[in-house]
Image (spheres, rainbow, N blue to C red):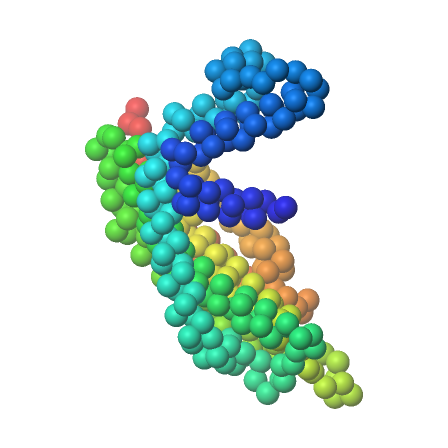
Length: 307
């Protein structure tokens, strides 16, 4: 089982079963397995109190995790409410995306121009629609996840300074994250993808006609849209690092040569084609965004303490 599937199962368990019942359920299952093993060995059945004493004596890490679940039940209950809100929004977003799945597919395939998309396996078209709908639902739900996460950690902000930081995150950084991500997606859709796809379509010359499978096309396009959108968050990341004192604007400005090379490497990794034109199309805005981050760090970074 993959780590993503494990995390999804834990989230479902917290939502459906409830955090207050999870530790007790885990203890009951563990006790049943212990008694089953004792029965196979001809040993007497033990009670839950005896089992707890035995697990405590052994310093079993699973027992420590169960005790942590009991201690954190109240916080997990709050997390459950946040997860329920997120799950409802995700389901609604997926339903709406399913209704407009054909329109979404037409929008995503538009950068391909006249290139024909085909499917060669019976379930491929269904899986392509499923991937498109889930991705659309995830993107719509992402702002809700960020907002609910801020509300969940809000009680931990006690001082007035920390609460000011929280308000800044809620009312300033949060919209900025969405705007920068949307700008990155728009840049990838209108500037990068047409050039990259045209390069792929004409790479083989006129002797071979380009016919791409819809699943591979969607995987390529969606990955580019998402990762370019994430890359456009560079100014905010740099500003936050400066705000919390991890880096300074002066150090960032002095390290522009390193940033020059690193953004070029990132552009080479993100860009699906090996030609320098597509790499430059991605690299130029990334380096510009880094410089914008340096400017934001200078304006909003942590001020040095007076001597």
